Image 1 (tube, rainbow, N blue to C red):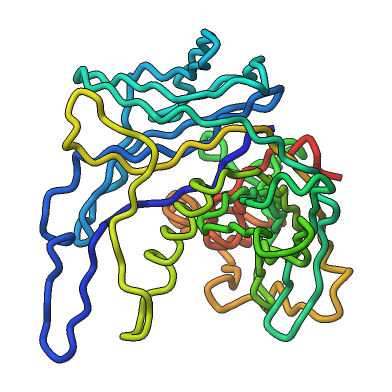
Image 2: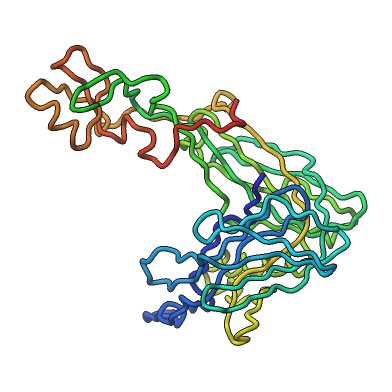
Length: 377
């Protein structure tokens, strides 16, 4: 399975400021930070996929999309001479199915961009990740809370990180049983259904923990994800795949500081933000800033399903809104409406059609796909 360590972390700035009574625009907003390379990923030594994503920072006041670093040469090197080349599988995303290296070796990431810049991470020791003992949930007033338990009998791990991928099934308000084909309304075949969809999302928050201050290397009831009450994610069936990684102390310290800088700001009493130094460096220009931290090891995974029927109350889906009301179209206006933004729901004869807005009859309008995941029950 593919591990996406900490998901999509978009670095928009490095130094923020707080003003008391007058407006202030921090330099991080106005400075041109578009050149800063962002490196995301985790080197999985073993049978699991290693995926590295390369993007660039953008200013806080920028409305541009994330810039992906395409066409780079990306590889993993071990200090015992191994070289493992990654392939660009999509824009700025580089991957290798497995790295058959030695757990006794140290590993680093090498990157050469199309403009000739070279980047190296520090050599990092391999750390074995213990299994996730249990993944479970409970329902509270504000929603469903998901937790993980783990431990290391050898007391060697001590620093942990988690990320996850969640997938949920959802349905359109109406089942569009017909379609327009060559200007004619015809039945929609079962394999063309657009009523049932699945959507997959990746974690965007930072989740780490340490047991270094405890007598036993045990993590109990670590919060992984919270699903807000009565939302679409558990409107039918929900799944979460949790990835657990063992970290070095330096890796833990890095992500802990990043978490403070990005999530714990908001008052004068919060820890003040600072630029965080990772373990990746530009060797062709030592003054250039690089964002990211590479860790090495294996991954422990566990999947959990939650069915809406398992919950004591979950008011979703809500009653159809006015926007989802059907309209009765006769022969004079059928093609006009269907050609713009309506789709046929029912067709009683060739001239009388009940139609609904696309977002109410086509589940794909909300970002999902009609392809059922292979692991789905």
